Length: 208
Image (cartoon, rainbow, N blue to C red; front, side, top):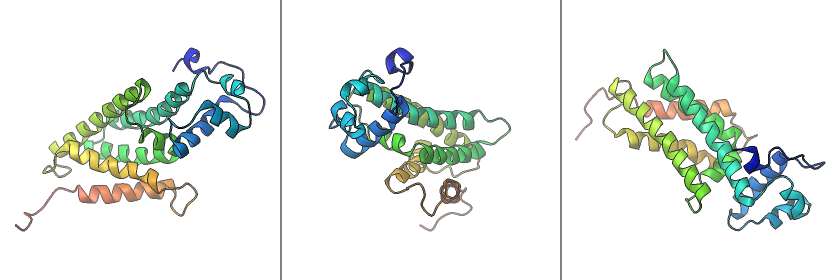
C-alpha cells in the first residue's frame, strides 16, 4: 500500500496515531460487520470528530485494505519462508508453515479474524481473496511434494489435505484468546502434533 493511498505519511494528531485508528476500526468491523460500521461510528468510538479520523485515513475502504494486508502479509511471509527453506524436506517445511501460521494468527488475531470473514463484496475483498488463494495454492503444492516423497499419506488429495490443515488453524480465531492457559508456542505444537500424526504414511491396509 502506498503512502498516497493509506495516508501513512500524514502527521498524527496528539493521542491518536494511524495505528490506533486502525486497531479500533478492526475491532469495530469484527464486532458489527464492515458494511454496518461507518466512519462516524469509528469517530464516536474514539471520541473524536470524523475530520480527525480522516486526518489519518482517506476512507473506510482504506482501513479495510490495511487490515487485510496486515493479515495476508504475515501469512504470505510465513508460507514463503517455509517453501523457500533450503536443506529441509517438504514435510519439515510444511510443519514450519503450520507452526508459523499459528504464530501469525495469534499475533494478528483481530486482522486474521476479519480476513476470514470477507466474502468478496468489493474490489478490496476480491484482491484479498486472490492473495489468500495464492497462499493456499503454495501450501497445497508443499503437501503434494511431501506426499510424493512418501513422508505423509498419499491417499488424500493434496488440496483437501491443505484445506483441512489450515481450516483447523483458521478455526482458532473462533475460540483462542490471548492470555489464556495456552501459550502461542503450546498452541502451535498441539496443532502440529494433531496434524502430522494424522498425516503419517499408512503402514497397513485398513479393514474393509
